[in-house]
Structures are given as structure tokens and as C-alpha cells.
Length: 127
View 1 (cartoon, rainbow, N blue to C red):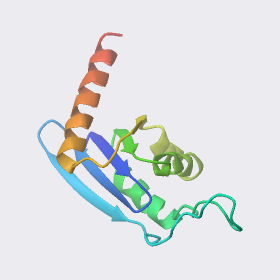
View 2: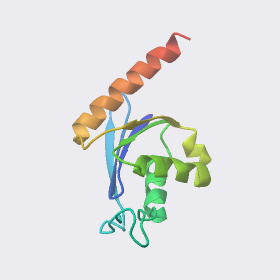
View 3: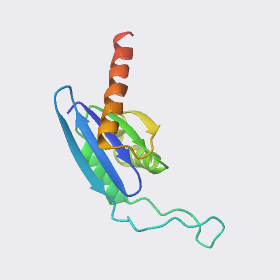
């Protein structure tokens, strides 16, 4: 597939790969789903560490894409980018943008990604 959009939080990643005529959906779940964030000021305060196996599975799921859009709420999308920077720089180079997104449906994610890449393709064509 040509494009991929990754909607990611700390519990799951929904990956939609697509080109003009086809699309494919993938779903990756974290093994640390029940881990909670701690309150600030408490002993051991801070957030749970990133699930490296989860980030590796997400990386593998998008590695064949030519261009990637990463979206999602919170900090998971940034943790994913840091993971790519350290462990998969070839995949990191394919990331075109990172955007904050609430909890849309797969159809909404795909529609947004199609519009994003359509606009990005027009910008490249005018250079």
C-alpha cells in the first residue's frame, strides 16, 4: 500500500493502509492495557513506561508504507515517534506528519488521511 495512517494511544493502534483503489485495516493491542498513570506528587509518580513490544508491532505493521500519517490523543504518538527514531529510522523517515486526534471511527480516520495526503500531493506537485 502507498499510504498509511496510524491512530495510536497507549492501549491500541489502528492502522489503515490505502491507495487509490484498496484499503487494509490492522489492529495492534498493547500488553500493558491495564496499567494506570499515577497521580503527580505521589511516590513513584509518573506514567507507565512505553510497551516496547507494542511499539515494535506497530512499526512492523506500517513498515511497507511509503508515507505515514500518525494521529491520536495524548502522548502515545510522540512515544511512537521516539521509538522509531531509536529503533527504526528508515520507518521514521516515512512519517509525513503527526496530529492530535480524539477517538474517531476508522471511517473518519481514513477520510482525514485521504484528505491529508491529497493536499500533501497537491503541494508537492506545485513545487
